[in-house]
Amino acid sequence: MASEDHIERTFLMIKPDGVKRGLVGQIISRLEEKGLELRALKLKNLDIETARKHYAEHSDKPFYDHLVYYVTSGPIIVMAVEGFNAVRAVRQLVGATNPIEAMPGSLRGDFCLEQVRNLVHAADSLEAASRELSLHFNRDDFVSEVRVGEIYD
Ligand code: CMP
Image (cartoon, rainbow, N blue to C red; front, side):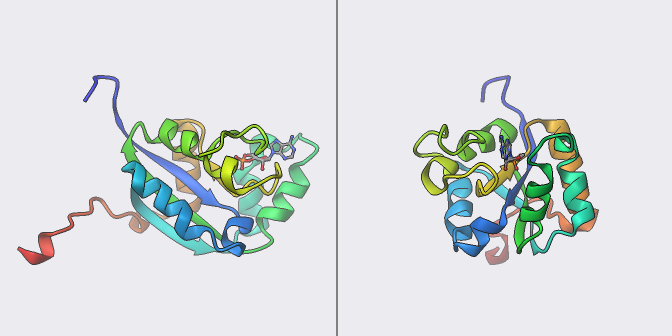
């Protein structure tokens, strides 16, 4: 392990288009194949107030209302994802915000075409991850560690 490698916990949302199109399994598989681990997961409908808070930094953008309307239009999945350098690792798997610029092999590069309906959202920094995790989860939603095999001991 290089000294710059740190275990981080980040936030990922599968947006309504991802849930509606039945891509949840494939998206989670990409995370798991990379070696990242789930620490919390919920399927839920986002209320308008939480959506506005989640996207508060974009409140002055022309697409803000459309984004809030869209992200509250159907069920979403919210996740806490943990692993080495998880913030950057998940952002790489997700790909560029504009799916046309996202590399093939990334989730947005492979599965979507539009900027608002761009399949997933991932926190862009540890600070954003912390803020978004506390907006979408309660403390007791998290599992601390997954110890596969202990049940057989
Ligand atoms: P996300 O990663 O959820 O973070 C902010 C979202 O705003 C982004 O994905 C896009 O869905 C949306 N977004 C960013 N830029 C634009 C844009 N130029 N036009 C429309 N939507 C955008």
